[in-house]
Length: 515
Image (cartoon, rainbow, N blue to C red):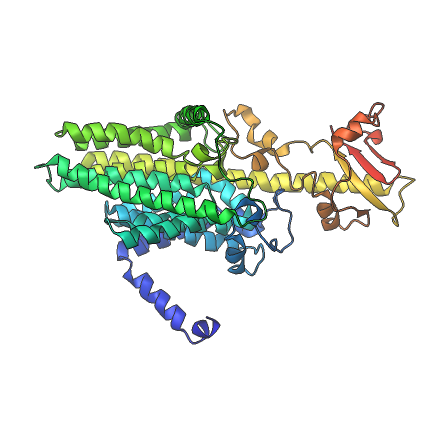
């Protein structure tokens, strides 16, 4: 492979693949890539510290394998086995656009540069992506799963056993990259039905609606078989992982029904709830795009009652499909960004449908303006979030530096002793203070770690102390929990940080009482 790169063969083949992409797509992807660089500029320029994996700079040897993502170590090899600045983000933007191109090219709704640019950019920078970039150590893994979801969808464009087989393999690789991409695959698979019906109507295929629906049904069946087959193979593969106890199971049939009802309600509710980066103006714009797409698609098949009936069924299924992952796994954190890639393509598909149904004249201007307005809101929300994370990082480093100074100034501190550093309580939630300033409110958090978190966490304090040049020798993990410290009564006569009594030493334990 290295020889192929050195002598230019690989670059030659990549250039051929790039040239095979239609010119409007190439231009739209290139323009969207530039927008993506600016939309995620602080992530790229600063490589923000995240509390979930405080690694400098190496990835884990078995990166994400413990979570069933056994493709993680192989993807890590593409980025030097490290959490590399700039490369991780730019590589991921390219992956996201490649996956989007595969999906848009399979839909084949339009070939105009303007429409393609809007859809590519809309999908790339909608704020649900923020969590993917926040967890920078696995950002490429998120978008590799997009690639495999797109490949699984694009492969089955006709009823073919070998295509179904290849699609099933792509589903396995998708799940082994990042399981929540299942929701993406569910959304784009169901979207294919709507696309097929609308295109048949525009092409004048109204002689026999039943034949059209039968053809779309066969295609949906084939893609469904690939999903089920691939999902089964993936579950079988997890049996060989160190921890196979997380394999999906239900205790009873009633549990399946309860899960379905809960997930359906959550999927519908998610269409209306606001989040820190998707406030009321953005939510209204997204709702108009989705509602407009539903109405426009029904208007497009108004002469066929059968097709109207099918669309009335499929659109709610797409909404539920955006939460497909939670039909199989415990529905915790059901609204958080990193588990909701399906929402990205639900809204992205809706935008594409509007542009397809209204290709010209007055309505096209309205649709384009609405999508462009939403995209501008996304762009600004992305940058505001990154600024908040940067300021939060600076605040956290300053606070921990003050704690470090206080510890090293204690009269009974011995630099030759190995301590167990125990922090009781989290640092002040400065990120939330910034996000919620000027009276801004939302219904659900965007991401637990990204919203409530800090640059370190209770299990990685030793790492950030080393980053700040501490000469405190601490254990790599806390020997005791904060709860046990409270139960011992050591905090009874002490006040929370920054009071002088909040930092103290008890035998070989450094204890910091935050709150």
